[in-house]
Image (cartoon, rainbow over all chains, first blue to last red; front, side, top):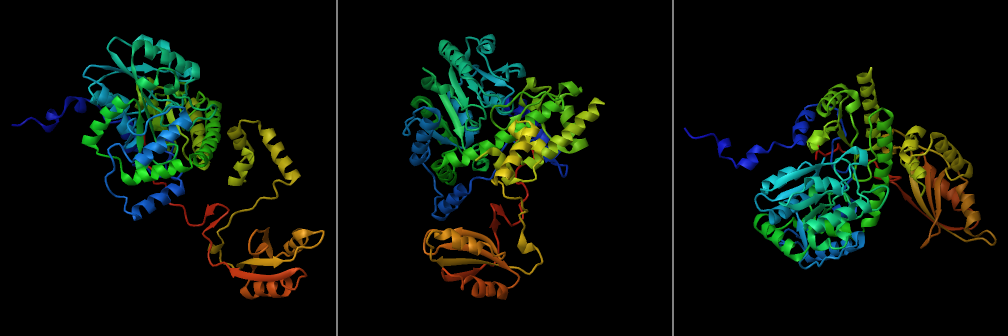
Length: 391
Length: 159
């Protein structure tokens, strides 16, 4: 008899579990009338001018392959945007690659850099795909745990404690999903120095760059000597509420972008032509669209963080993205128990912190990318729930 | 614009406690600042935004373009204020372009609005001409779409 199909799978794929988010989604989707703080995408609609431009592009028949790099016009616009927003200049001819979301760009970057056994440093709690993507690229993931005591920021000392001579890449994601953490200029300076000393390459996922609430975003790329060793990833999903368009981009030194382009060329060919036109329109007036959303998110952030602290769920102040990451340790349940019981008792969905790495134990992720009406109701129900646990 | 006004413009019924959290200022200060806005007349009132097409009521709304002669020592203001005084006039604006004043006028019937135009508005000294358009259907008012909101299309849990 033949061995079962599962035995014939690639071992890396077979051994990686499904995302903890997916697992929780299956439970939530069996229930009705749930208020969800579990949604990792904006509740705003894609700005109307962007949608309208997409329809226009479709009518004009923009339905063909584009250059493997993406439309040059869009790469030029992105290059101007990066210069203005982050203070980094990239040549649109060979230093910008349009991808299918940041997720693809991240995969390309890792596959372009990693030889089997190369180590990749990254920080947890982090986006659900990082560890899996490193493993799929045959890299060795080295997780660095960040803690609420210093606002879930990453420090040089933490990296020094983990890095080995086999470490090749450092992955960064600030503002951070799921913690909302943001790095200070000094933090980044120290990490940049460490990266230069160890001759590492940085992959920085800055998808939430526009969504910071107390200070403007600073990119690691803007520090001396970093541009030539950094792959900068960004996209349109969060700041322009364009998740379903699946459009991201990578900027970096031409040799790295060329290597990534080769994989992209043979696997994806190009990002959707319509999504690229939509992105071009989004960049035509980024300030107005984004400023409105940022103001609204900031007010919600203030509301949610103070409400959690008042009900006894210690919540560090999220400085960016749209997630609060309160601790549930005090109520005597672990992350998963808390999330399941809250869902059953009060019909509010949050995501157990463990979905974002083992050190997420004791926390839950609450996205405030939902209306104030929903947030108020959710917070009231969580407050009631916490009270029943305490008594 | 002050964020407090932004919040109230979106939802005038937002509780002071919630606003206090959103803006990170004490509750008493929220109340005091709102009172100050009301006193200074920056906040002129609070109204519900109705979807009037869904109400079973006899009402017609007309948009009226009015050409007027500005008056000595009063400019457009005097005639505009005079027109605005009629309770039928819901809104009145001074405009650039081919006409001077734009009015939103409400009445129970078409005949009533027509009567207002011919008997009250047109005879006023300084009114040169009027052009009346009746509204047929409302799609959006005060930034609010009148059609029913579609259900949230997002997955309930996503990374």
